[in-house]
Structure formats: structure tokens, C-alpha cells
Image (cartoon, rainbow, N blue to C red; front, side, top):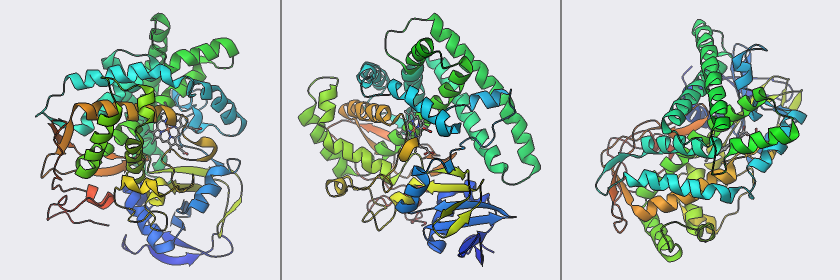
Length: 482
Ligand code: HEM
């Protein structure tokens, strides 16, 4: 069997028949988008990948997304497949929202809702502006910057400050890198748990060690936070206030929430920044229109929240960037009870995967789905299950309003200072790692005067299999792969 021809039989999961692809389950984590595309092409909206009796079920349509994402009694979240033993650090650091279900999940959402409510959002504006201005202080026209590295570092700093009131860039970076490493290990071991192999046992031991170090760092963070005074609003202060007033939260529970919040917040937002800047650089006409909108609507050095509200084209750019290159490319649920999904009867314990990337690239929802066309948003109004960069239903991203405030504000400040041209002949690669679609290469860009509109740069790399770029963007050697 080749990877391009995965169907070897059609077996019953239960009546009626559902076609099953037999093949290594590990082809999915190795290249999730390529694997899901193959399955969708071969089987349509519902697909099953099976190895040695273990199955991954995939849903690709808005209707099935709706079913899986709205029925939280049956489709549970188990983001961290490996919870560790009852008294382990791994159990504690994985105790955040994404591991909770039922009433426990509902209660935590209620508690965290206040912390991320629109009422609190304006309190973050000053910090977002200040940190973006600090980033821009070091940027000079003519510099060549790796936008990917810059945005990851920027978001480590921003997330540390907004979530934890951390003004210590070194500590924020160390903590962020440790969390990324731990998330990645979880993903490797979680996928490994599906197939028994010696290397995964070794990885499991390493994961437990990382979880211990991570828990120590989070405890240190709590101690520092309680010792220091904080002028600006931050999520951890609000959580400590909730802890003091409601006596519901233990420090152990807070450890799980803090870990998850940091993990969920920083790379997703960094990737969204990188992709949006990249797409703008490769679409000069869009860059020009954004420049005009900023000139017409933003008066002072810092955009006010009211001015940001008026930037409707910039909003379409962000929306379109998150459609075509969604930082969260897929997520998963696990069945908690027997359930019929489309034509399949699934037993409890079946992993079910839905994908933002695949849904957002459906031709029956979006015309020319692989192209970046912000203007399309003048005409379309997709449902919550057709456009879901932040997920949908009861587990929809709790940090979405904060993420959008960060992206709108920082992009405005950045694009009022300079424009970018991707260095011609660069290789730009993108891949899904631990559910997140991000750049996996450098993204070198030349900083231009704001008055200068860049030319499209010819580039190579796997980016051409993810998005269709304008004429002139492909080196002859890098034709679209998919
Ligand atoms: C552009 C940035 C972001 C993207 C693309 C994103 C995407 C998502 C998605 C798709 C989900 C749903 C996952 C699922 O259904 O399995 C989610 C959940 C979540 N996100 Fe975000 N997110 C972003 C930023 C943030 C930020 C800034 C925070 C916190 C400050 C955050 C915290 C969370 C939490 C706690 C959950 C779990 C919600 C639950 O299980 O009830 N995210 N995010």
C-alpha cells in the first residue's frame, strides 16, 4: 500500500458500512494536513484511519463539525492524552480547561469568563501598545529580520506580561520555551500511546521529568507574582482575586490553568502574526489598502480602541489570514459513550478529529479557497462551523477576544512603522506541530519604509502546498504540491 492509495478494504465500524483506510496511524502526526487531505479526497466528509484495530475518525464537513463540537456530553476533550499518575506533576500541570469535561469544565469556564470578558479587555491595551513599541524600537528600515523568530519572541514577552504580569523577558522566555517543549512532548507521547513502541516509553519518562520542572517554574512564578506589585491588569492577578473571594481554586488547580493558558495563548498568536505579515508582504495590493485605511483612521502615535474599531479592512485581512492559514489546524475529541456519527457507530474511547484547515479550504464554502482574498468577507457570512479559527461551541477559545485585541493593536502599530518584503529566493516552510500550523523555517523579511509597497518575492518551500500565492511568488522549482 502506498500513502497515496490508502484504501485497502471497506469494513463495518458498525452498520452501515464506512470505508476505512488501513495504514500507520503515525502518518497523521507526521504530516496532518497531507494525511487529512488524502483521507478527504478518498472518503469524503467522514473518514477512518485504522492500524491494528486502533482507529482515528476524521470529520471534514460543517455539519459533522457541528455535531462533534456542540455535543459535549458525548464528545469529550482529552487534549493531553497522558495525564500521569494521581499525585504526579504531570497530572497537576494537565489539569486545565482542556482536560476538563462536564460540570467541572462548565464551572471553570464560568470562573475564567470574567477574567477574559470584554469589560476587562481595555485594561490590556496599554501593555499591548507598550510592548509593541519596545519591539519596534529595535527595528530599522533596511534591516533583514526573521519574522517568525521575532513574532515568537514578541509573543513570549506579551503573553508573560498579559497573563502573568511578568516584566522579566528572560524568565518569560525560559518559561515559554519549557511549556512549548512540554506541549510537544505531550503530543509525541500522546500519539505514541496509540501505538506501542519502545521509543514512546522512553519519551514518557522524559515527559514526566519536564512536567516536574514545569511545575517548579509555575510555582516560582506564583511566588514572584505574590511578592511583586502589579500596576497593569493581568490574568493571574484576576485569578488570585477569584481564589481569595470564592475559595474555590486551590494552588494546584491554578497551576493547571496557568500552564494551559500560557500554552494555548502564545504560539497560536505568534503564528497568526507571522502568517498575516507574510501574506501581506506577498499581496502588495492588500498591503496598500491597509496602509490607506490606517492613514485615514489613526491619528496619533498609538491607536485608540475607538480607532481600532473603525479598521474594518484590517479586520478582514486578519479574518482571511486565519481562514487560509489557521494557527490551530485541527483538534480532537474522544467519545465518552457509544454514538452514531454520520454513517458510523462509534464505541466509547474513539478519537474524533476535526480540522479548521480542511474546513476552511472547502470549495463548496469558499470560492478559490486556497487564495488569500480579504475582500471576500464583504460578501460571505459563514456559520460558526464553516469558519472556526477559534473553535466553536462550548469549548470555543476563551482567549479569542484578547488574541484579536493583541493582533489588531500590534499589527496597526507595526504597519504604521514599516512594511516588509520577503527576501527573494527564501525557503518558507509551514507545518502542523502539536495541532498548530506555523512556520517551521525562518521567514526573512527586509524592512521597508511605510511609503514603499513591496513586490511579490519568488520563494520556495512547503508554503506553496498550503496556500496559493500570486503569480511571481513561486520559484520555478517549487510548484504547488497539492
Ligand atoms: C490567535 C490565537 C489563538 C487561536 C488561533 C486559538 C485557538 C483555539 C482553539 C481552536 C480552541 C478550541 C480547541 C478545541 O476545541 O479543542 C482554543 C481553546 C482555548 N484557548 Fe485559544 N486560541 C488563541 C489564543 C488564545 C489565548 C490568547 C488564550 C488565553 C489567553 C487562549 C486560551 C484558550 C483556552 C483556555 C482554551 C480551552 C477552552 C476550553 O476547553 O473550554 N487561546 N483556542
